[in-house]
Length: 351
Image (cartoon, rainbow, N blue to C red):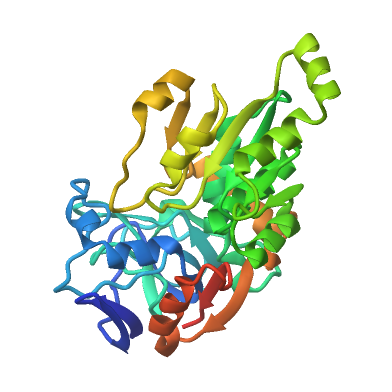
């Protein structure tokens, strides 16, 4: 098969062996696969894969790796020991995890579990879901990105006395915004330096967008959450000031620490970014402010299923996130383009 292969730190399209489905696995043909920031983090920070003692995400410079974990695919064959419940030719997707004879692997981040940047790859039959949708595969494949922010927003369980502040307006942040809107939470305040990303945040459900070059996000949050001095006095008298819930969706060193330093006392922080090179946090300030920080964690299967159904049904419109599509020969250039914060939220590979 043809695939855009990562080896030695570079990506190029070439011919490699077709994957062979093992017990409980399906062979599928990639129809569309989104380029995620974690693909770039994976290839740029080999030490993160080298230090992953779980074996789920492993980067070996001397071995072929086919990335791509946000996919829509078509069933081509059933491996041994499968239930064959999904007919050949059916459009599908799945949580990007593959069970192998040596353990669980993240699809697209391990030599044993090639991803959607190739013509064919493998899925775990037990996790595979049918894409019951008339929407294009380029839209359906965005569901995996939606599931991450969807899960964070759902787990946060905001109350009516809390106002969310979303830092960064990439794909994960936009999915946080979309799910907060569906949950009836608001006003939703979104922050990004890039005007096009702020516009997309509004399209996905944000109420207020902030350019941090013009105003502190935390001052903007206070302006929105507290309102006029008169309304602030009324809130204090009745139930106290609103609480702040921050969703950090940037993944650049220093951002989480700046949130710790700038946010309100008692803020709840959901850190979805997680820079691969690590970060320094002002833990004493966090302690004095009584902050509660929840780090990452991928979506639960239930939340993944919910997000997938919302995208497939069209009840959640993700078209504002979709940029251009590229072929396998253009993947390397598209990965570079995805580093540009002013570029499209999602470039999709169509093998």
